[in-house]
Image (cartoon, rainbow, N blue to C red; front, side, top):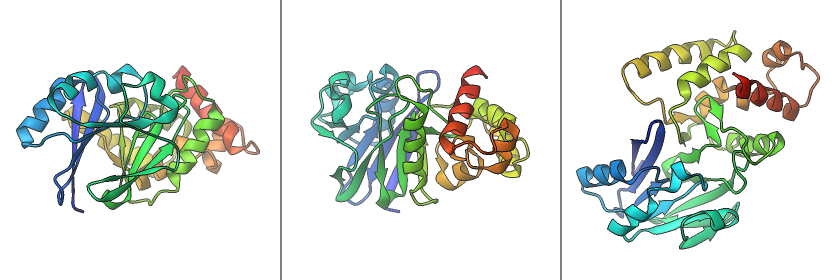
Length: 255
């Protein structure tokens, strides 16, 4: 892997990410919750900033952009469908579009649900996907604008990526997500083990993000509405995957 991936804690529980192509030296920032920690990490690493990729319009993902642009002449990339709510874009893209970063292809995936126009960025050469508030570690984003059917469709798009893909999501919600996941999937041995590891990581103030898609497929209930044990516990043995997903999301909202 000829990339460096850096996770930067921001605000109270956000994450930003730096992706650096080692061959070209190009550096991309994915989301900008807060300029200070990002600029400090760039300075410590001796890197400049070439691109900013924005996943969606919520302030805790974009509010650091103006301050960063004052320091770095970075190209700003985001979704065409969301551009009226984003900082000014240099490149606006839609689902299935691609662009080049350091000589490598980046695929834009519409993952609407949390918001309409939310996108993920998949870099196959780096084996990573930046999902922000769509697929999260042991969870998925709350549905502020989209429907359960839209979010489940978005989850299925991400589930089709290679299992070894690193999933870079936008918040440190994993411990609370694990506690909820155990209420709908209490006999899942992989989930029980992961929950213990998460508790230890948080006790040591270690980030639980990023994760891997293979781990999410094993343990994240929002990727497993077809699981017979989850369906039995919910009393939804004969329901559609979409309806089971909707029930899991509704229960998480009340948790």
